[in-house]
Length: 233
Image (tube, rainbow, N blue to C red):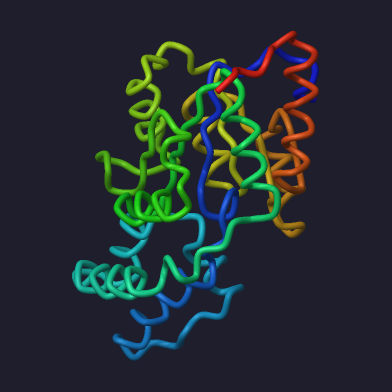
């Protein structure tokens, strides 16, 4: 359990499904593409099973062939139209961010959400200043689970040599694969019951939590055990 180990050198978070819920919004974006190509729309289970844990930049060439650029344009236009109005903070995430910004632990974001949308959502919530780096899909040459986005994020904070002490927090198989590929510590938060056991068996994350609230309580115990005092201001 995380309470019994040294504090992380940094905590880097996934975004969708970990701190915020935009699944319905993103599904609507994909279904706008499906309608455009006269294809059957996805329900949530089909979306999750087909593409939910892949970057659209990676998945769309497989789905739409040489028209993938056209498909991406439709997807991005639809999400740009609705994503801020549909953005929902997951239970406990706001409190977790407030708690962590009162500590000395550096915080980052690495997501497969399109980089511009990710920045817009951060600004909308007033969270951008919490993080030393924010990396979304397309910001670097490859998206997660390739380790390059995480390596880039850590380099921006001078932490690129601390990978083994970094904790990556996410909810999906792509998040757990990123942690494994990068050689950092995996923390699983908010995974659905349908996949949690499989992810634990395959990736053996250091900590498994049902919510951000549960993660906050465990981090508080870890901080107390390590004698870390919360920063002032």
